[in-house]
Image (cartoon, rainbow, N blue to C red; front, side, top):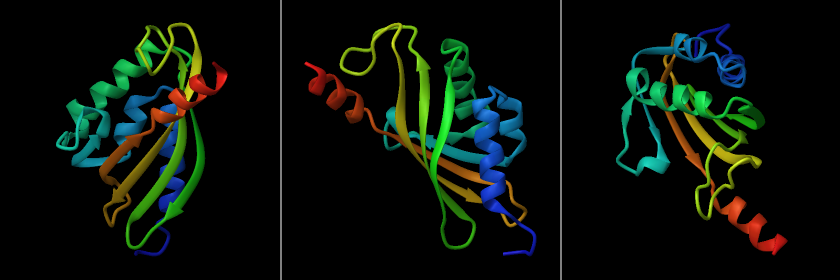
Length: 142
């Protein structure tokens, strides 16, 4: 890894932009041709970040005006890889049976595997999220 490359700082900047609803700032941290996956769309949901994941981010931020991100843990792996556990969410605009209730503010645990180029740009971003925590919370309240 080149000296001076701080992938954790780059990752913090990415999530600060996400928390600040700055999709253009998020994209500025991604390499041209970067790819990603947002697992709720299936294990074969590889897509470009620009025009793919970007649209998911913009739609989510538009639908959930108080959307926020809290990074819980960040682990730098071998080479140019950072793994992040984060809580994402806000007040949900619609019911999703078994997942969220309209008007309820909730945060969902997400795990990200972020792979960087040698220049410090995101080349691949894979996102996995856990909807079981919401169902367990609901069940324990009943």
